[in-house]
Image (cartoon, rainbow, N blue to C red; front, side):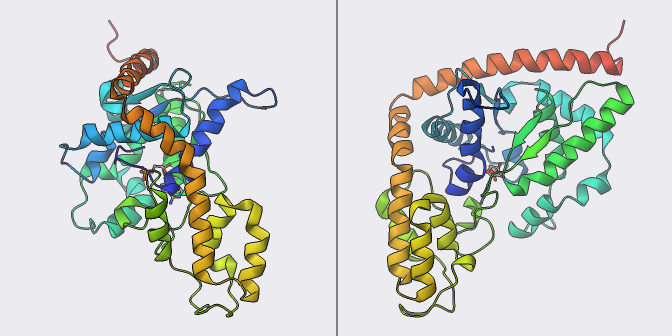
Length: 329
Ligand code: AMP
């Protein structure tokens, strides 16, 4: 994840929640696959859309606090900054020789970002190369599974292509990783846009108080045909219902019936949803408050994670250089 500060519900249900699940497979007697997680703070990637680094440290700490609050256990899953493991830059450079400019220009996620952020005329070279750096991030740790939201799947596809190209050119070094999305791989925003996103200002943050969540939900877009209580609604096209499905599954049937019959008004429906979201986030908020008061522990998490990631990355780069016959004497 890019260190953009506080996280929103989309980041949580699309990625973070899944990370915690995968992490806990190591302790689960019923898990059919066991995972060893690596959690990268993409502080180089953040520069693709924002060259200003004055807030980068604060945003990094804020994000790590969210991860810890959500249940990432750093002793099991190293947390580290991309910029502190130099091998990312080296592998990025080598991999950038294995993909064409045309292929990168066809990437739908970069096109979407360029449009949403008005960057069509000013896209930087590094932004186009975003998925190549991401390939380096994944392949340095020989990642096999990449748990991401839907918008990231095209990038994982590029990683697979690059891994194949590397292996066929220089010999088998890398696995071909697969993307793994959750049921809520693209959580819609409060304004009804397809994706909740901080830059679009349509998100509920994990750190929002119950009052803030209520205030935001009050403004959420609902079925335009349901104007007042009594009008029948269409839950399947209503984003508030999508949120109920995730955060209030116990009442999903009742909400659907109430909405469709018209008995349940949108304001009541939204407030019930806001309460459930606030309940859902309460333990995360509590845990993050602990880490906010113990920033030295968060710093130690980074120092330790960076040491462990570096050791892994150095091993892979030694294999890469040897496969490519670089530096042979
Ligand atoms: P970003 O901060 O955009 O780099 O996103 C970090 C992670 O959250 C990525 O795995 C994204 O795919 C995921 N993500 C971001 N927004 C959403 C959303 N609205 N729904 C689901 N996943 C999301």
